[in-house]
Image 1 (cartoon, rainbow, N blue to C red):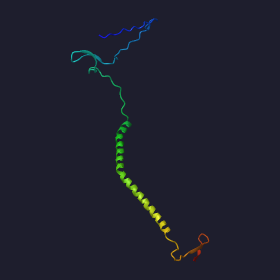
Image 2 (image 1 turned 45 degrees about the vertical axis):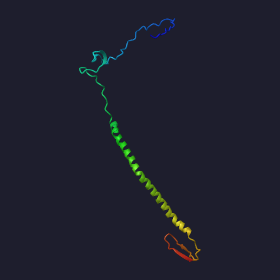
Image 3 (image 1 turned 180 degrees about the horizontal axis):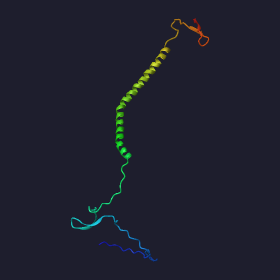
Image 4 (image 1 turned 30 degrees about the vertical axis):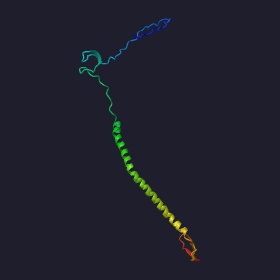
Length: 160
């Protein structure tokens, strides 16, 4: 047997506490609504146990519950539809992505073609020599005058 040392505590020297004048009511450890009975187990042991109400006893009426609101039902029904639509859109975008990239490259090629077409006349004009080939050029000067808004126009042409 193990040896247990004895611990000596000093005794209080003050006055001993007195119990309250009015005893406090004791609360039962088990609520009165609990269905606890003395039952016999299959091996013959008798014990206290929680039991279900017997059919002869009326079951307590639960509080009436409110129905599920209509907005909650609608939201619950629409959630898979919205999720499926988002998923389908993602699949469609993934299938369309190569085509969109090809169209972007084609549009850039069209922009480059238009830029080259606009620059071609400017390049052709600057590459041609002016008046150095030995041919003479003709300069025509025209002066047109008219009087009034609907007046007849007259003019002269000068060749040089």
